[in-house]
Figure 1 (tube, rainbow, N blue to C red):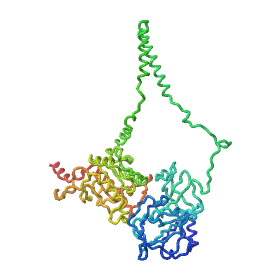
Figure 2: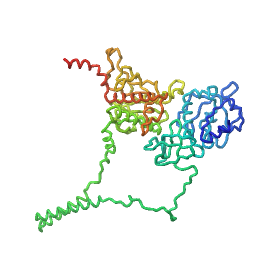
Figure 3: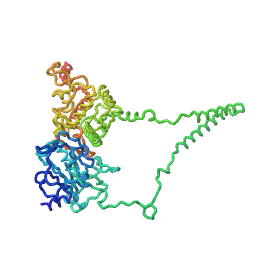
Figure 4: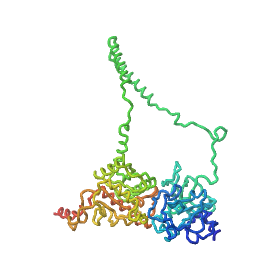
Length: 556
């Protein structure tokens, strides 16, 4: 079995192994482990052990787990140890708090071997029964060569892969695929980068293939401009251009002076007595022209943001808070762009392109609603920025806070509060927040455009929190919707709306729903439509109860 498995790994496969009693007793020359292991296993916190169970340490920068929040409720009670080597740190993806490796890796041919130094069930650690473990496995699987490319760069099976991430001019992988065509994988033929298939990643989130610009053995050489060859050297065309504005302005001034002299001559001004006075007047005028001329000014000197504000006043824009984390901000932009397209296709509202906001200095009053994705690893907003958000909400704006932790709450701390929720609580502690309640079944949000009973996103199950309305005892029992005065200034969810709305330039969803269900994505878009219509029309739907009475009165 080992030779067949080793050949499969050499051809691009990814092997993920887990420790256990059998691996702890295996010989040290096992070819299918990424590092050299010590014989036996290490027990932590047992009756005969002086050490305590160890938590996880922060993930190193070379790990695919980098950027994930370190869980505080995961403890390791048993593990297999790696022999110290010079390259052990480079092969380690995760460590325990005492520095011993928890996840190690090594490349073999075109493939990779990944080893979790704990078992795949909960006897050695509670890591396998946490939501954090699912994310670790997902990121590990993403590194696998899912496109069927062998170690020699040739395809092993025919298939067609859509563009997933492409390299831009700065060498950065971006989600914008433009007019790129799907990559055709042909057995026995190495795929090449072309204008239709730019270099990048082709496939999906679950597995992709890298299409490189140059072959593996390519050698870059510097062009020697001193030797004769087929190359030529020319100056840039822009360096030879020059502006005609000074020359034309001078010519216009000379023509103006000539015209003035002709008029004066025709009026008899050039008599001897008048000549002296006219000459003095002309000299004074010319001196004033050159010495009192105002400096050159531009429209954007005084208020550089005026033009941008005027452009955004022309149409409605969806806005999101820039957190400083590139992946979170890119997902927010893609999500609001997807919701914008959905609004354009399904409603008469045609919003403009989404806008990222720096809440510490950008003008907030231009936007009816601001989407704020909460991230515990993002910088905490300054008190000045929070006060500007508070003023925006008091002036009638609405902020949609999304903790995006409905799924990751499986691995949250012991008190049931995730890191993102704790960050949201810290932000809201500096705001004047009214009492909140889940959206009632008779609220305007449930019927602003679509008829909805819940508001799912990429995840489902988290309630949508809004400002609490009047007690139902103070309103008529047959009222179909609670009117309320104005619109709720705050909306809170944990269902990750932007993750469900996010699409690429071709309209293809970037992230799967949990659980995978396209109808859940459809209802997530409908939730976004209802929220936008509620923001723009307020409690308009609540007044529809009066329609029968109005029609009856008109009939009389």
